[in-house]
Image (cartoon, rainbow, N blue to C red; front, side, top):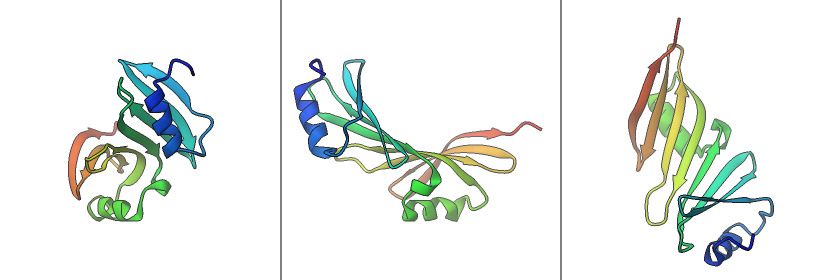
Length: 126
């Protein structure tokens, strides 16, 4: 705990007052706090100066905001939302990376500012 950037620790405590089980890691000069809250895995990433870089959340469809889910399902109504990666960065729009499972294929899509882009597509084996 003593090695963690003081500025990052102060910011983390002010944002996540109720979290006491986080684990800190140092990766490529960045500080990363990892914890779970309400079935959501959080990765809070700070740069070497202790400024918040971004927050990544990993979760299932049931935790996805209704409006975001509705936007995805309006295009991919026959697909199951498998896993969601939500990325929040200061002064940037939230990005959702969503893994979809269809009857014959898998898709990884990106949703940002209401726009959907397909990042990867795979056909299922027979």
